[in-house]
Length: 411
Figure (spheres, one colour):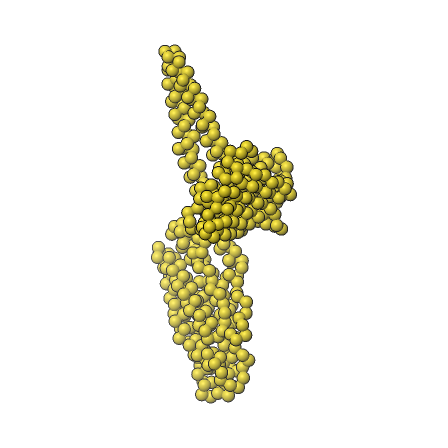
């Protein structure tokens, strides 16, 4: 999160002058409060670091330090609020530590707490504030009785030093730190998604093709035993086994298509999207305008995104028609899926939209859902364009293509 633009002029203190306006009194109050606030923060910092470091050889030291760093964020929030109200310093709050992360156990939680840059900078702020708080308190208090005529200028200088300290140490993490945190979060999403896909593949194999092949082997074994005694029964059993083989092959093809379809590898997005559109329960118009093929990973994400969106159209939309458009804009691959159904789709509605948004976010993608009640529904997705590293073995780069497919259409 970056610092917000400068606030309006009405939120900025005017130039210091020989007068005690509201800003001067606010700054005086802030400087006098520096000492008790700095004392509380200094005691918290010294106690936390001392006890946490001293107990680090035990099982409670590091967790205590991690909790303390999270508590330091509360102190930082209080100081930012005081600076906003008394000094007019407008600074965004840092992102929560839990943003974009999933609870993956104690040690990931501990590590994320110990390396929190916001917490450490807040502790540094609290540590160096004590001597500064003593100075500001003493100078301001003496100035109220001795240096009254020039006190507004003294107060303004001390308050500006406070403003610089707050901006320097209590501002959100810089862009690099934020980017690292986002990449770590996205890596967790990718790992979780890959694990879920592997579990799905294992389940489909176990409950589908594997079970069918076991039954096929048993049937062929029985047919072998009956071959000499009852050839006709054996022939019927072999015929049934032949049907089972066809079904098992179809299930394996469907499973392979769910992992990575051959048509996508060989012919690209235009042919692959037309293939999945042909299996949709409503007529789908597919328009692909690409002069080249993106990287395989991006192409695969685009394919499965459209595939899941068209499944939602079939299951939930009650639409009569749908459309898929794919094009490139600059360094972004754009996808848009529309249908004229009943609308009302939500990210949390159980239609997989949240999962799609997570998957796209993991590769710096964007997912936008527009689905008012009564329809139509439009889903727009952006993916980063990455050039294909090696030329495809078969086929050619995708060209402008427009095709209409519906239920039962041939591909």
